[in-house]
Length: 229
Image (cartoon, rainbow, N blue to C red; front, side, top):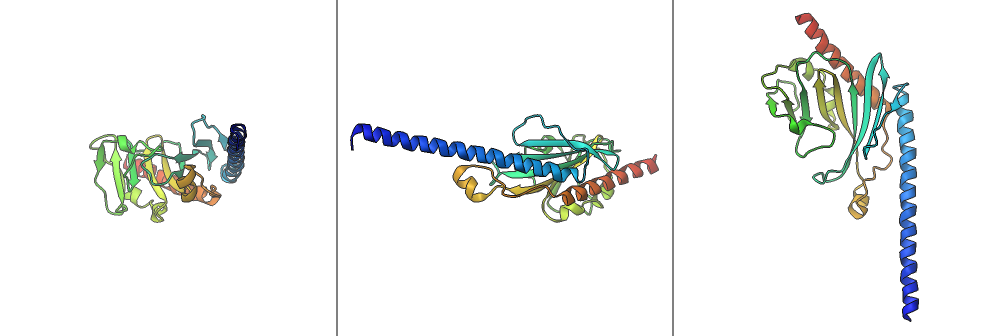
């Protein structure tokens, strides 16, 4: 085989590989757009006025709207931190209305490595747990000596019974639950280092369930504070 023929053969292989990679990238973008549209449609069955307010942060999509007269926020976060065995896609559901607590209360299940969705690792004060909290939960706050209505909170932890709820955050400005939607497909991530999540979509019933739980918790905390006043 002559040098010219060899060069043409190598060039053809390189061109074919480049075209294939470009096709894969286009297919991935198209699938992502279809998945985003499906997520938005599902969200709007629960939050009719949900609007995409994403700021362009890679791997993060944010919707805001209203539900049962309360301002709410939904966010999906792709967490690809190297410390995780597999990338994960998280769903953050928040009610962004006032809550009668004096500081930040953060309950994290099985904390081990940093996450992209939480400031839990930056909270310096660990709280003792009252009865009723999961054994795997760790409680932290940003203010030493602060007392929280842990009995009320413990009565509203039903979503944490399945192992997919990761965090409960309560601040004076709202309440939030973070839920594991899916982990990346092991084979594709192991070979191509691509965080693909298959057909995992946001279930409207899950959104409704988490909002109902958060709303009940917020109402219980605020009612207790009014009765104590």
